[in-house]
Amino acid sequence: MATLLGENINLRALEPTDLDFLFATENNEQFWDISSTQLPFSKYILQQYIENAHQDIYEAKQYRFVICNAENIPVGMIDLFDFNPQHKRVGIGLLILPEHQNKGYASEALEMVIDYAFSYLDVHQIYANITSNNLKSIALFEKNNFKQVGIKKDWLFSNSTFKDEILYQLIIS
Image (cartoon, rainbow, N blue to C red; front, side, top):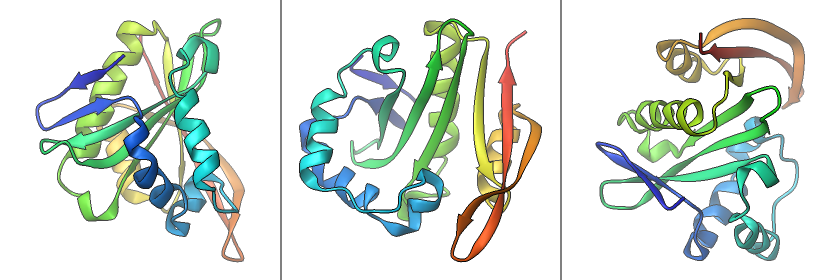
């Protein structure tokens, strides 16, 4: 899987040249809440991750796309995770760097990966876990027909505060 082309973005596989991008993103404490990260990653560990990113989603049960804008600059990532072909479901996570937000990249990437998951992975449903205070993500996923199906109360602990996490599902009929 090389590239998925959209109107304003493309989704591509991780490349060795993404090491600095991945290092800066994964070690940005601003994003640790959504990734459940508590310690920084070394470049060595991230380089190994990139080297193994070629694994098929059926083997690794996950896949990370780099979201690039029209100038082919990485602006974020969209992940498929917990892929379960037996039960025909997959989780989805999305991150757009703050300086690239509000340009439609998240919406276009989400639409592309929804289509990919239903068409090529033959899943029956896609789910997302979103903190209750992440209003932009809630609006994005609801715009794309994800339905709230549950709330995990006090699910995440960050900055001395518990946060609820909302479970969203998109089920194909």
